[in-house]
Amino acid sequence: MLITADIAKVRRIIQQARLKGKKVGFVPTMGALHQGHLSLVKASNRQSDFTVVSIFVNPLQFGPKEDLKKYPRRFKPDRKLLKKEKVDLLFYPSAKDLYPKDFSISVSEGQLSKFLCGISRPGHFKGVCTVVTKLFNIIQPDQAYFGQKDCQQARIIRRLVRDLNFPLEIKVLPTVRESDGLALSSRNQYLNPKQRKDARVIYQALRLAKKDIQNGQRNPARIIKAMRQRLSSVKSLKIDYLEIANAESLNKLKTIKGKVLITLAVYLAKVRLIDNIILNVD
Ligand code: AMP
Image 1 (tube, rainbow, N blue to C red):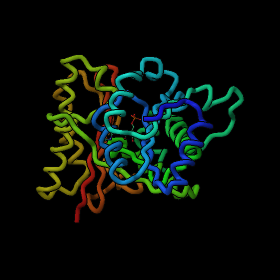
Image 2: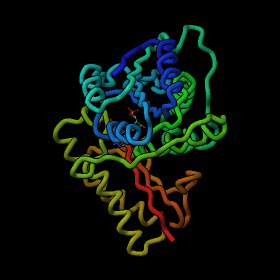
Image 3: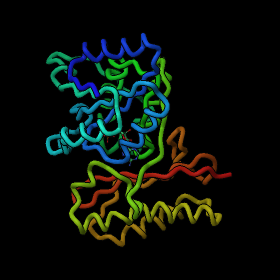
């Protein structure tokens, strides 16, 4: 596995791979890797000839009161995991290299970012779009891999690629979960054992919604009420948002139909966790 923080070197290495006719797959991450990230890496390895993984904790996508400083950084174990997966290139740029002092251009999405996480995390998706644009320009992958766990991010990245004509394909892969249903997340390590146990209620609430819909419920308000009730069994849990929306437009649904996104963000003590499911409903 080649490892570098140097942008010019990344370009050279990838150009060489391309000259050999290799298809380049790219997995952007913020590190503290888990099986969710590795599922994207494995998909890239299957579908591409040359897999690039980036590790970069992007300051631009953290709000002033968010966890940028304490976000887990685990370079050595991450490197070991990626080596084991036979990743071709690990790119770990520095913030200084990506954002020179007088950096003054950013990319913002103006529609999908107005919902859900965009409300409680102003500027977050602008930070995401800006860094992903830069990484796409540096790596110029044929395909890039994202997780359904960050459903709004995946939606916005697809829009970014369409609207700015990036010549690449976005692949969105299913959420990888713990055996009790909790979606894997680098932030799960902030949870103490009690909070970790309580966190199971998130997926339980999503499953409850799925069951209600399978049983014929088509009224989003009723489903949300039942989900809130289930979530309220954990006293320390605070709901940031809980919505049922069209999975493409992210507009709230008045009736359950089509590609339905059920999505939520909650705080368990100070830890913000997100999760979602998508259902196709006739
Ligand atoms: P992050 O390091 O949190 O920026 O995540 C990097 C990529 O991994 C994003 O595309 C995430 O959506 C994806 N990802 C994070 N957690 C999971 C998971 N549990 N299952 C699948 N993909 C995930």
